[in-house]
Image 1 (cartoon, rainbow, N blue to C red):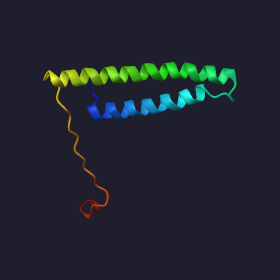
Image 2: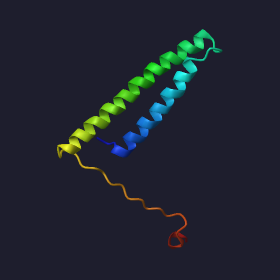
Image 3: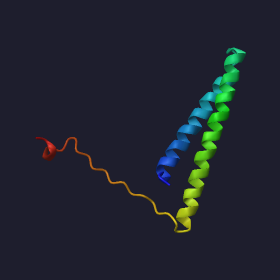
Image 4: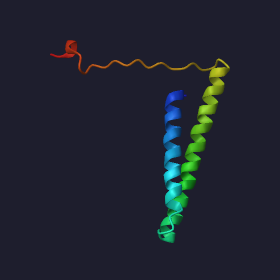
Length: 87
């Protein structure tokens, strides 16, 4: 798996926000029926994407719990604002 627990959790949070806002649009009483139908279709896609992310996170956590995967650690090497890297 190329994803980390943190990146999957971040993507899940973003997916939930998109679902919330798309649901709001799908329920708008002042919107045209065609627009609301389009929002409902998009909502179904967002739910499928969210469910896939949740399944991937669950699989990663199970693999880590069983010792088949380890948490990846990515070090930050920031070069900006460091005078040593200025030419």
